[in-house]
Image (cartoon, rainbow, N blue to C red):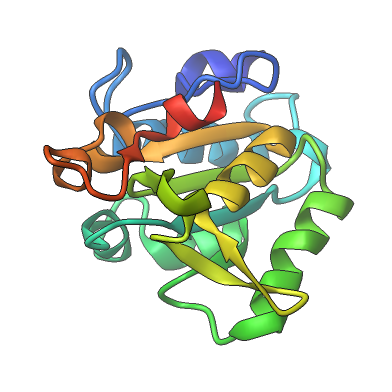
Length: 193
């Protein structure tokens, strides 16, 4: 559709990730285009409404990361973070800014997968470690067991409308996947294949 073409993100059928170095610009450029398209739609300048008729849910998952992409995003001006949260996305999960923790935070992920399949955006920042069943990056706990980044990315990615690899680490591996790579970390796209 128009939004997918203008934004340049991957759609639900291909499950390939948009990446910082891919055709169509980096994550911030693609999000800016998405925001501008949604603004036009909201203002009635086009007849198409945002997916689902209201703000699409957004999950920003941090895996093995320095958090630099999230910090840059928080400091962005066009669009500003508060504008995205208030007007354009239902920002349900963000590992740096949310108040929820523990089981409550994990429940947000599970509820989003159950209530909004094929509708939510998943942004992954960082590499995904594979060694030891992914235990080198635990994003939360579920039923007393660790929820690894590997599990979270695969489960959330399977139901997402879009999966966006934010930054060098999520897109290409970056320093977390550099030799000797003791955690066997991989970019997001390699985990979703």
